[in-house]
Length: 419
Image 1 (cartoon, one colour):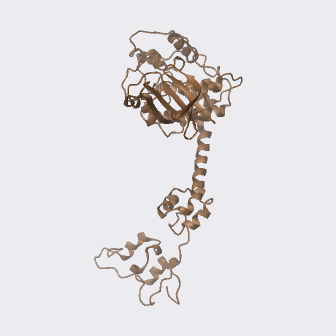
Image 2 (image 1 turned 180 degrees about the vertical axis):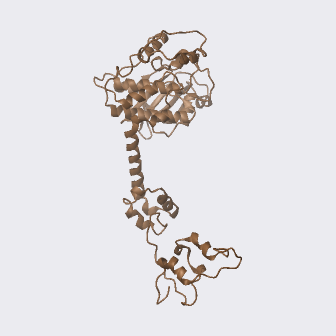
Image 3 (image 1 turned 90 degrees about the horizontal axis):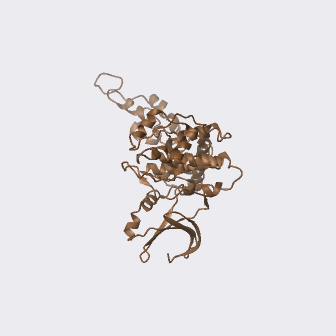
């Protein structure tokens, strides 16, 4: 930590303390997360789940980036130097009198689903998704705090008391550790509701009260779902049938697409719960997907225009292969300097070649034609084949020059009286 200067304390949790530090070399500010647990060696530090997860998930725009791992041998403390964000979601909504606009909430949830999808596709699930672990800076959302993360390939049972109670999925409450990565989707749904309404969805005081509050809103599940949970539970449990009030009464101003996604994220049965990847394709995020595609297309177009002078023949060919019909009119000024490298895919007039014509009495030799001057190369074997249009083995006579004229007239320049 000799290269960093501590500015102020940002926050403190059960297992760590977060401070704002400044790098003395470049003057940049970072967030320093110092673990309260003692570490024996640098190798042990690199083997921690949080460090391993952040290394594997690096370079994603919605995952907090790890810059440096510092191990102090004298004090046996481990510090993680991460990028500095402005605030977390809890600080964003705390004390607000009016909720955020639904479009901004959708933008945050779209980024959160991207982060979870990236985690799950890399074999990790978070297990502690909550507003305090979701950071924001200039409307850019990043998921943080991977100390509770776990590999999706580990067989259950897992640790029972892992996530924060208010955001704990029913399978975490009603089984002895038999849960999977779908618990992250449930927690994200609770965060979704909390940002929309500025209040937690299931603020239970204990586990029994937590289950009761879930049933107050969603109702008691089907007997088949409860039987599935009972198979993974030593202690028996049973619930009186109850019909929940529903989410629409709690957030009456919520749009139908957002409400639909919220219900799918908060499905009681984890097998019926939507995955983050499927949630990204939901109707709720349709406008965000379209704007993202437009921005990506504009970025590619600008990049092509700026780099058109430094293109190589290979990159030019790839450019024409990837260019869509809709952008051809916008890139006409790019096509002209690139035409000397590759033939464009849209119809153009072939260049005229100055080929000396033979005497009229001798048929034009096919072998002397350049490859570029043959617009229908697939027809060439049909003209010169010995078995073409005939069952006999006799070689077919050379085609008349009038036949060749019909094929190659557009590519030859008239010389004198012949072709």
